[in-house]
Image: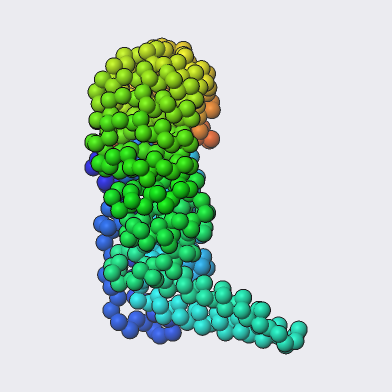
Length: 539
């Protein structure tokens, strides 16, 4: 969607411009001469970074609402914009570690977009460190810094030896190991995640790449897991499994996206893999069905899979997503998976029956975005454990009659005016904490006052017909998001809600100056002028 592309390009431009401001201005290389000794390169274009970030938004987070994807990207952009000058000295203080840079830039980002925010922040920080270390002045400054660090360490060792006597071998060895790691981390930069704009991948030998991948594969941090999972497509499929994926200790929190036949052929070697997205026209391969620990599986943009019965060979599967699989005609085989607790059905065959889901007695989350035979929620199977329900585009015709069957429901997404009107008259789920409303052309927020327990409210593609003062009737509200909402929104009505965080994307808003900046995140759409004053009465 054009709006999302603009958001991604804005994020990439902010990261690249921060690089430009920090390292591309005329400066001494090693900080020993009065000025640069050779012309400096022009700033890199943000286009390639934007393409990489855009692919992540569309591939691994396609089921996340567009306004949440845009919000995550803008939150990362705001962090970079507020960081000031990220020069070499500041990154040296962080040991040139992208994870430490991410920790410094990280801001709270609660809600369903938090995993995407973490991934985008990780990617942008990796790109930033990559760009800085590829700059001509960096090598000189790093070399001088290394020599000075070595001299300081040597002086320290000599001082210790003078005071405690000989046998400094252990201290020297520890220093040499630390120094070797520093040199490796500083000079073994490569186009690992498809983010380098200054150099091409062909300039780096593959063995150099794998030096850096021993560093990242033993690290169990979720952000590192994300990076390693993304990098597979940039290398030979078999060699990457041998050097990176097989030795990795744990993949509990990361999806591995499988796209090519070469990658499919390697799945049999990844017995510990827990989360996989199979993208494109692949049959259900035997190598995939033989993974004993596979718990999360998503099939996307697949026009060849018809029969889901082979999935019974995955005894640990508890989350299944089908997105753009029009040949699937029967959900019955899914019900032979007794552990499935989350099911996402998007853009499937029209008229697909949901009645087989009655046998999924462990199901807690159901996302529907496909035309079906269901006319109202009372026609759905009982699903007594359901706590998360999403009705997305193509399921907006389902009436909310029957919503009261799930008193434990805490998260709900609805689309369009009819479902919003239904929400205003059906019994209130007393545990409802998160509500998302999509594509409502005449939304009156006063209708939400009956949902007093709401903590998170997400509005996307809505036209508001009332002011925001109605939100003051929701005492527990902690977060509200406006994405591509039409009309003018006056945020000053929310100024007294000190506990409330606000996000505005692609939405014209007034009163932003009355909200403390730590509570408000918004895009760069200009604030509208104040309404004209009424003319004085005629005398």
